[in-house]
Image (tube, rainbow, N blue to C red; front, side, top):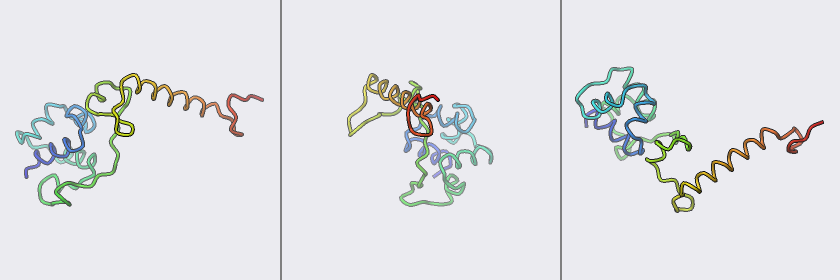
Length: 132
């Protein structure tokens, strides 16, 4: 399997859109498309950034190494900004197997923000908003 096919395979298996991966490894979406379609070869620095992002070896990307089931093990370290509607279009957010509506997601985000504010205002005794 060629390097471009490996990059595309990894990206698709993790459900990451081209623009998001390109942004994470600091290249243009167009360049990533060229790499994935084997029209251009990425330089060492770019290959290294892609490997670091997916936590795979350069040998794996270059096709010199197979990993279990030809699918590398990756740390669960994909960041999704829940307030970015563009990113959310690529994911189905669920709770107990049921997809969240936009209204439900808004409520979850509001809850998290309130909880963070409450935690920030908690004093050393664990009491909210207590002043001396």
